[in-house]
Amino acid sequence: MSRILIKGGRILDPSENIDRQADLLVEDGRIAALGPDLKVSGAEVIDAEGCWVTPGFVDMHVHLREPGQEYKEDLASGGKAAVAGGFTGVACMANTDPVNDDPSVTDYIRSQARKDSPARVYPIAAATRGLAGEVMTEMSALRDAGAVAFSDDGKTIMDAGVMRRVLEYSKLVGLPIIVHAEDCSLVNRGVVNEGPVSTRLGLPGNPTAAEDLQVARDLMLAKLTGARLHVAHVSSAGAVALIRRARDEGVDVTAEVTPHHLSLTDEATSGYDTNTKMAPPLRGAVDVEACRAALADGTIDVIATDHAPHAVHEKEVDFVEAPCGILGLETAFPVVAELVREGRLSPLELIRRLSTGAVQILDIPGGNLAEGSEADITIVDPERRWIYDAAKGYSKSRNSPWDGQEMHGRVVATLVAGRLIYHCDRGVLVP
Ligand SMILES: [Zn+2]
Image 1 (cartoon, protein in one colour):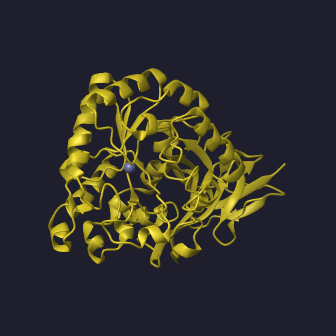
Image 2 (image 1 turned 90 degrees about the vertical axis):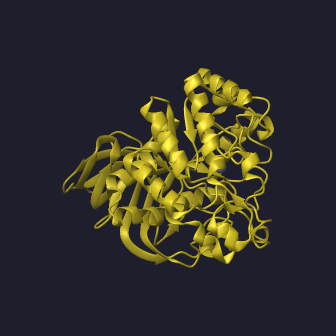
Image 3 (image 1 turned 135 degrees about the vertical axis):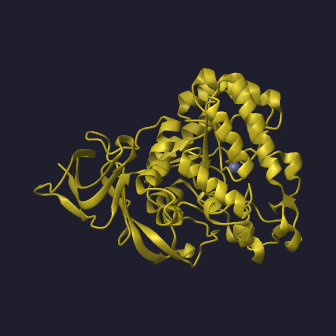
């Protein structure tokens, strides 16, 4: 029988609103006991003094690039980056090559991930064929193959009639629709947030109205259809206000925000660093503040990284030409731990948004530390400082705006199904 005893940590279980000092015993892959001063013989002991012991983090928005773009990332490297970031589960978007719009692709991702990835991988299938926004995918077959949600992320479904049908059908299939909400005609060729910064830099702007307008439309269609809508990477104060109002009215909507939209403004773009280019773009201070407030009051349910690896040669080009997206998995915890230090969120509420929130939206296992549950556990030291070196990270790519910076807060250990799979002093422990 394998036993791991996690000693002396602060147990944070949002599913049961537990926040207290205790030991936690893992036995044969499951959580066996939780209590003060557990005495167990023959157990491997992990010292969690000064640490938080939490349900495994779940990132419901990553791009793992397999199949088709394995030079950027694959299920093995992305899975390692995930567990190094404390994520025991990730949901991967459909914009692979080929697109995950067919059960054979969903099936490939699941079976390959079981072999290669130390983190659990949940495929999100496309809502429309080829992400073209025209013809619905075969949602029930994709669900049966293991898809946990549908999304054309990276692209917006611009045709409202198609979007209505997608929502109606998703309701029958019982899975949520995740939207990348940006009105393409308003984004036009915008590459940074439209405002004083875009003017100063001489770069084409992408207005917050592009996001607000699309979120408004999708909320109206969610209301019309009664379907479950999840808004990806919310970044504007306007979108936040619309989502808050819709929730008050009973629309079945959830939302996520990224660590970068919570921590960086468009000022970060001032040096033309292409590792600050993403969609939606980094916004102004008012928008960042609105996102933080919405995360704190629960209007935004989830922190998701939108981990989007790109090769060095792809990012080392003119800002206008560079692809959108940055890495997120290995830096997420320290970046958002800042919100606790600033008193914006309690530790328990932060962990809810890193773990339990996504589990509930995707209806997947995890998100709790209840006795008898599979032991997906993350141990973090909220005070430990370290330097993030993207070149030494587990992702195949390096496109991070935090490269070389000091981080405050560190993932100490990650357990998946009761196995210690990552430890910060020993690295990823793949058998
Ligand atoms: Zn997106």
